[in-house]
Length: 150
Ligand code: RB5
Image 1 (cartoon, rainbow, N blue to C red):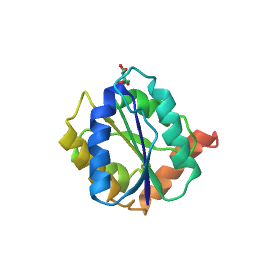
Image 2 (image 1 turned 90 degrees about the horizontal axis):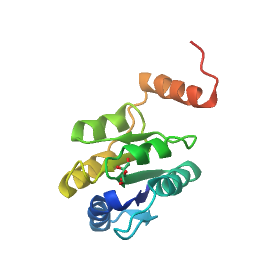
Image 3 (image 1 turned 90 degrees about the vertical axis):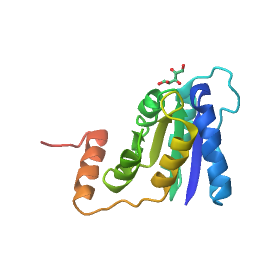
Image 4 (image 1 turned 120 degrees about the vertical axis):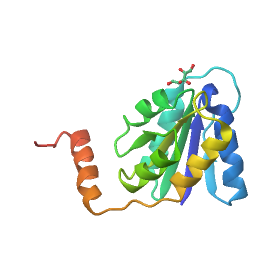
């Protein structure tokens, strides 16, 4: 499994902490930036990571901004992406198990670096449960594709 990462200036500290974790654990990853604390626009990094997840198999994404919210909203506009803002262990686990999320979004102004590493670790090491959750994720896809019927 490959990992792709991106952040804005508000998420740089936690993204860098996660990158150290990825190196220590021999993950294959691509960091799409940003690389400094200069102010940048988070949709650019959301787009780079979200399209990499969309276009490559067996790839999970990690996006960080100040809150995790803006960057998740932008990422979720890319078809096939299910980006989830997570602030605790339970959310990171359940969004893989039940939502089959392919991107975790975190906020550098919300959680500390150790928490970001823990959530990334849980997210990357938890599998989708399948079963009844397949139907629900398929319904999300149908909404996205305009084919959803009540
Ligand atoms: C940038 O100041 C900030 O708006 C951004 O990092 C993020 O929190 C947006 O949701």
